[in-house]
Image (cartoon, one colour):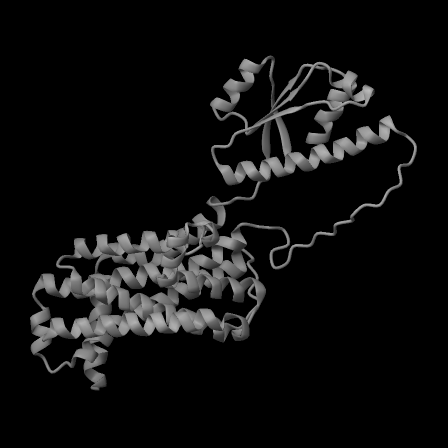
Length: 373
């Protein structure tokens, strides 16, 4: 290997890359925008639930129900509805997240010791958010039932029960940003390495300089290294920036080994570079390369478990996810970030990522050699 040729080829690649102002924006701004979007905008944490209240009882008991919901600060009464039609209209227009309808005979039924129905209408447009709101509502109603029971039967009721003591590990407050932000590290590495690696080779073909590079003394492996090393450096720098933002800005704990984290990212980067090289061999124009890259990125993103659990997918799709390197790196990153686990737990993910990286990169290099002949 001639280090001078390799150095100049890498230098040429950096000059071509940063000469285009659009590339500068993608390299510098895109990672920061992505982590800010996933850290702040994409958030499943529920801080406020907007409520419309239709109180047909207007009694002390109905006011007790209202105070039970508003006491914690999560439920906020946005509108006191006059009738069912107004409730339906508020839910239809998205003015409220849920509605509470208190029947006129609430107090009478409670004092008789009978079951008093309270209708809860929840906007189920976003199903996961609706499920959380229903869970919050059930908790409030259980506490309310105990309160009415204590008022109705003032003597002590002693009976055996189960005292559940719930503790959430690794993410005690269930912050969704701790779930999403670590995955952005891998997503940035994949997107940048895929996009620019595939575009770099096609750019040489479109400009007619690939033939000039072939007839030079540059060896095929030197050309491959010269085309991939710049994007390895850029991807690692971007990964470091995103990692610092995740730890120090979003306060996502990093509990595991930095060396294991770097090893996992390196294996994933090799796989991404191999996919980028493969895309460059099947594309004829930069536009084709870009469209093919995004055609691969979207399914890889959706089938990785980044947002949607793999266990909830159809069985056939679950089998397809085993071919997705993004799936394994997410398990590695979240395990190292939040749980602090080591190789004794993550070795299946590292093994799968090693096999995929070796196969994909070797196949891409072999096909790239054929295109150089």
